[in-house]
Length: 330
Image 1 (cartoon, helix red, strand yellow):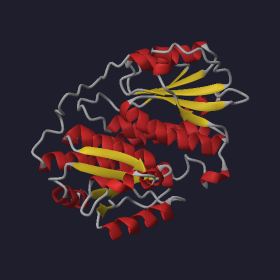
Image 2 (cartoon, helix red, strand yellow):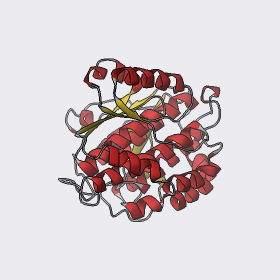
Image 3 (cartoon, one colour):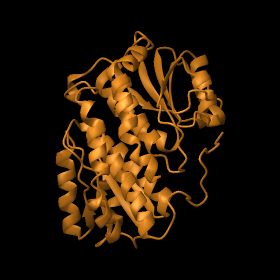
């Protein structure tokens, strides 16, 4: 896991350099008129899809959402997908329910883009356009470099949809510095190591972010669960306030994901409430930059925390209990 985390700056540099080609390929595939954008994924890819869903709706000005594979694999739904762009994400490109659902959507009229690390996978053969992560073989069970590669590729998908001033800039702008920012985060583990020591004995963890950062909160919670067995839950800061905040007692650990942007004021308000409740809240530093880039560096911080918490607890982050590299859900 540590070696694959360290490979991320190089992987991201290749994707940033290739972004203009990816944007052009996606733009040529987008239906006209565009009815909406739907993301299809499971696991860490589903967390990347949340990031893509926010970006797509901001940039396209059309509805965007997440697909429910069981509608096709269990309920055999008949849906008209004419005019929709479907973005199917799978690191392995081999999850059966993703392939089945992707095929059903394309047969019903959707334009389908595949995002995977495996160019020879079944997903690559199902999609009309393939965005390959080019991250190399990922041997660790907790996905790291393929996840941040997916986040970066989704910036190209969003950039291919007409940029909307609501985002403040085109998603692809300002990302030339992303590989260096991730390298800087990896070279500065001290804040994470201190937090891992502080939280080594916890049995649950709340991770909260809002807007684009919600995806980083979900992914960080998943990585902590996978590597440590801690019951970590990712929340939107707004959803946390709608009930679950009642479970945040004095001393409860809460990680706040701060990527800047419009949700910053919401995070400040939650931070004050947690302080009044006596919760043990923390925010890990990420480099300055565009909000989407800060989300990706926050994902890397989450990987560091998961890895270091696992080591602090005496568990092996490369051999999580009850997990395999490919989860063959159908």
